[in-house]
Length: 212
Image (cartoon, rainbow, N blue to C red; front, side):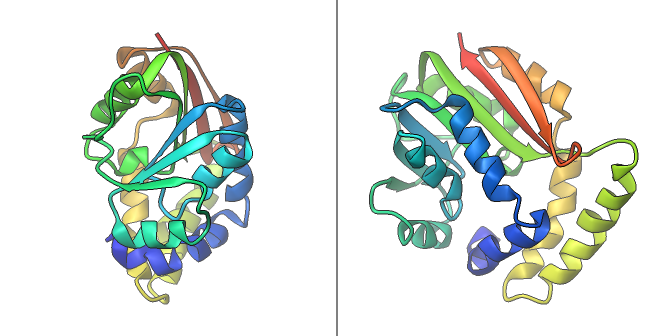
């Protein structure tokens, strides 16, 4: 599915977020990346969050299991190490990174708990993590969100080559933990100083934490 959607991934991201997604990625990178950090970007897709980590001064390794996504990512930078691998079974040694980022990817792995455990494993003690993902707002935005993500985006996706995979988006968001529940999973995985902030009225959440 991710190989099929790769050609329209960037265009759909811009459409779904009205162009705001790049700013969210830069905010995630700035929140945890320090100049000179060894940074791992998981589920990197076409590489935009990895690029933000590089712009923040990190020495970035970016991982995805979709070869087609990585083809597009590699065309954006030769300064990043692009690695085809499974985020749940990383071919990386323990405590080898200072920071880990993941943008709109944790809800796509088979188990969020195992994904967080792998992040903790490859982080040094005191290393930092940023998890950026879609969540479900409450209040006045809830109806707009339901129409936009559950109906309009899948419909538009079907008009683009490979875009029918975006019919998967609403279901993936419904399964994903709430910000509070995700924070609890992060605590159980070995993180502390867990904080989150919401963007776009609560449609997107950025969690940051420190490895114990």
